[in-house]
Image 1 (cartoon, helix red, strand yellow):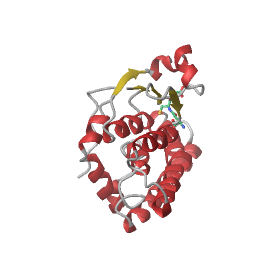
Image 2: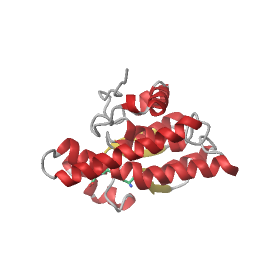
Image 3: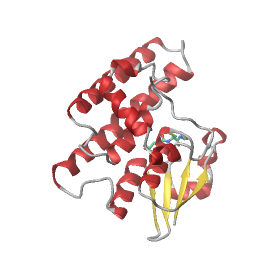
Length: 210
Ligand SMILES: N[C@@H](CCC(=O)N[C@@H](CS)C(=O)NCC(=O)O)C(=O)O
């Protein structure tokens, strides 16, 4: 059994979607970051950077924070959704790190300035709006030559897709990125993604594109 500490955010969805895809049993512990629950001492013991998601695997006694590390941990535990070695393994790692270092952090800033605080900082809105478009272009070019980021569906897609699901907050029109749109819809149709997206809030609906 695995304990999952999470909230309804892109980084949280990565963990719940992976657990669903891999068919692992888990117990959800909501950490309401709007109420500063991420600063509770019991949570800081397993996630010292006060951020969700985090897991505790009671089979092994291992706790893991940072969504990328959680995805690699779960893939290693189950042997699923990450090629064991060779080129496809390293492609998945490349795109996972691209998401962790670029797509997630830059889009997080786009949410901050474009969605939550419009009109407060023109430079920041331009900077992160342009960076969002650039990153979607990178993703689109990759998905023009591969069905998924590392060939087969993998933890790299699970890391990236929940951030693309906030395209409206980022002022991104997925029709301008047809390969991303095709990939987005294919992943949105997966039952495990639909279930994982409702953790911990069952009322959350996946944003749809025509
Ligand atoms: N690099 C971390 C980022 C996690 C993160 O930013 N989590 C946000 C929600 S998406 C959070 O917990 N924020 C609470 C806070 O900033 O105090 C990861 O990928 O796990």
